[in-house]
Length: 487
Image: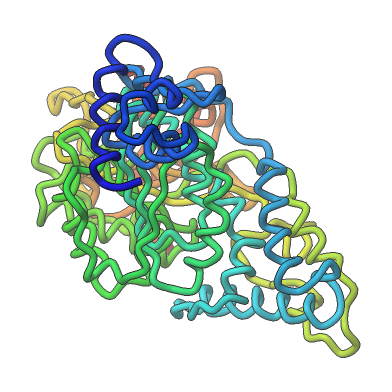
């Protein structure tokens, strides 16, 4: 179809969308040469983001509803079988139906071990097709789930529009993209742009076929440092598990803040391990200072004009996924004689693997994240009263004293079988603070029951200095009252 015909399709669609569903067969009658309805439908699909049209199951098109996406979300139990089949299809295409066994299985297992080892050592993973397939097996499921939990919080606050423009920086093999597509419903139109310069882009492009008819995808095979977006602001910019691989992560996030719609969000995610999670907080603070961004969540600055300086190894742990079939198949594959394994056949020291998991089963969803916004919005609008509660920045003055304070819960239970221990912060702390539950009671059960990111009131907590950890302990005992503050 030539450009004049395409323009006639667009003009007719703009008119008809105001009065009734847009039918390609009807538009055909008003286009010079009366092209086949299938050709008109294809033009409408390509122009849908600009026209604001959703494609229906019956092949007609209708305007995207006004408003924001519903925030209803019950968590994720498993990766959809269609995505697992798509990943396995790529493996069969590359290695054949016996991909988990023999030489191909040994190659994939060695690849996964290698990128896990590099990652734990703080190195940069070099992608090739084989590495990309290993990522699709091992990392995609957890990335697929993590992004949906963050989106659910944004949607509940009314920050996920039904027509949204998304940029995914370092999209990898598509875990976040597939998670986003799974999260939105049929009444949402997504214009999705991925920046992925590595060979992972080939796997990404094939898996994006699973995103549905109203997710319009474009893959930019270039470095983010040289990327310049086309006209139009983004509602969401994702940096998922990529900050540690960029030479100037804060600089790139700062650039991305300038690409946002006035009510848009930058979402950065990282694995829950110490180095990358702390690195994410450092980027968060640099962008906050340089770009005037507001930290929306989870490390909300409760006190005006205060900024944290603590280490803040903060992460969230969500429900465990049903172990993906491709991971189990690789783990149970027939080994080659003499195939190398990790210590005792396991990947010792891997923070993503729980005891009892196979070496190649990664079904636990735990991650660090940061949401930055340009509009001053915060997940917690609460402001403390300095006349009534102590600021954590002043904890040095209160050692061995009991104080009242407010803080955000910023970790799961970090204890290893001892007293429950949780990282907390109010955005003013100079060093880390941990709430330690020494005497559970009905008065302080709010500490254990609160969720990640919840705001807590802690009355009569004992402040102690922990010299071994270089941190303050807020001791929650039988004299302490802990309540969740609704906001």
